[in-house]
Image 1 (cartoon, rainbow, N blue to C red):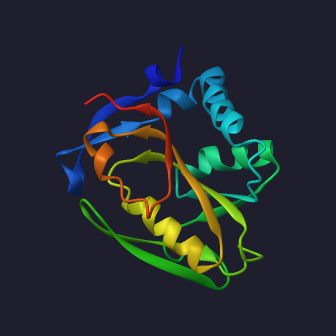
Image 2 (cartoon, rainbow, N blue to C red):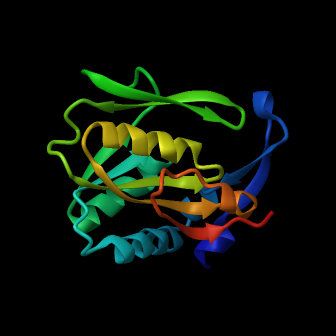
Length: 174
């Protein structure tokens, strides 16, 4: 089974009704397919001199540590407010259904110019990824690229990634 066959689409209920949710659970339940997805990222980023992989809460935490370990980089969690201990810096951003905020520990970027890959499960409009880029760059990082398992094709021309490239494994069917 391939990575693209393991992406499920379902309506997201509650406060965000009308929004379709792309779910990676099926991919995670199939160890060989999950490994294949991680390996595709590792193959792309090995040898690129990546110092850190920054994963966006929560599904960026699923892929980020495995990629970081495989390429010999550290993992930086980018979390929702008040989840990290110690001093943090934060970046607020607007989503298609509201606002949110990402935080990162002060000192996660140890030297100016650290080469960072940002990872998440999905890119739609790019708002969350842009917030991650701004947060990391404020700390002195050089964001090399953003990587996502799923990209939404209807937003493909609207990605707002602050001039940074985005790599997508699978484009979601509409």
